[in-house]
Length: 109
Image (cartoon, rainbow, N blue to C red; front, side):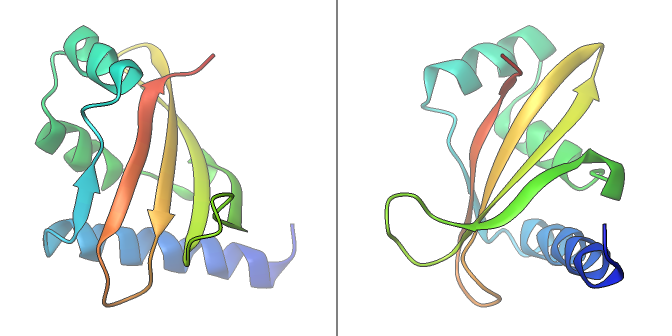
């Protein structure tokens, strides 16, 4: 991976942490897969967001990619082991001033 892409990923993770601190992220807990995973982990949406703040460069899998629904913003894919469960995470980055979204936080398939 080239240095430019590494810096882009690190910048994304810093911005994600800031967005969470500023409460500018929506967690999609109404999605069945996400809800089941939260229950399995004993988490609530805030606990899951706290876990997102601990994401590391090594958790990165893919992105940024355009939203496949054609909406503005970028999609980032990460995977992280939490309590022995591999978790698939999809974040919608809507820029520095907008609300972001944690679209997926569920057991990896």
